[in-house]
Image (cartoon, rainbow, N blue to C red; front, side):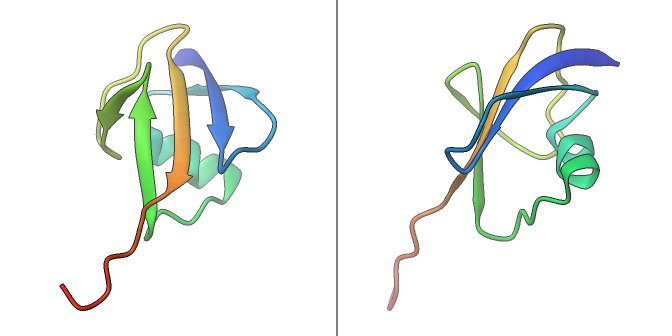
Length: 67
């Protein structure tokens, strides 16, 4: 497992051990239905492979109504 830094929805940065953003979400009890994931400032997914010292951010996705 990689030791990574995680920021969830603009909150405090935490250090966690995880292989993917999905594992982080499970460990921290984060809902991912309306979340956007970035890894080192690049768009990521729940299944992305994480490496040591990656910075993972969970933010709220913008909702586009009527489209």
